[in-house]
Amino acid sequence: MQKVLTKDLGAEWKEKFHSFNPQPFAAASIGQVHEATLHDGRMVAVKIQVSVVEVYIGLHSFVERLMSLFVDFGVYMALH
Image 1 (cartoon, helix red, strand yellow):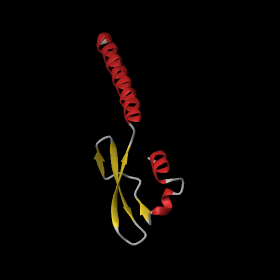
Image 2 (cartoon, helix red, strand yellow):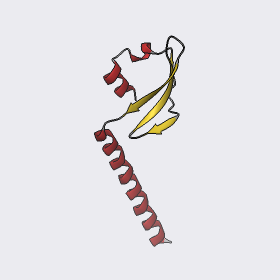
Image 3 (tube, helix red, strand yellow):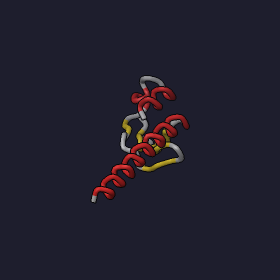
Image 4 (cartoon, helix red, strand yellow):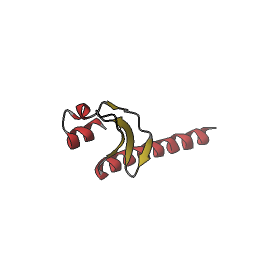
């Protein structure tokens, strides 16, 4: 999240907001939505969209972990 905000809004992105909640309150298409408050008091939703490459790497890593669990489960079932 911080990497994307820094790339899109600059290194001092936190100064653009009075407050910024690092916990997303919603999921968006290949991204997250965060609540923030501007310096004038307006509450805004900040959609942080990650690149397709980052999504692919995350998905690939998830599938590898899932396959590992299936293999471990198969070995467990074969032994019991």
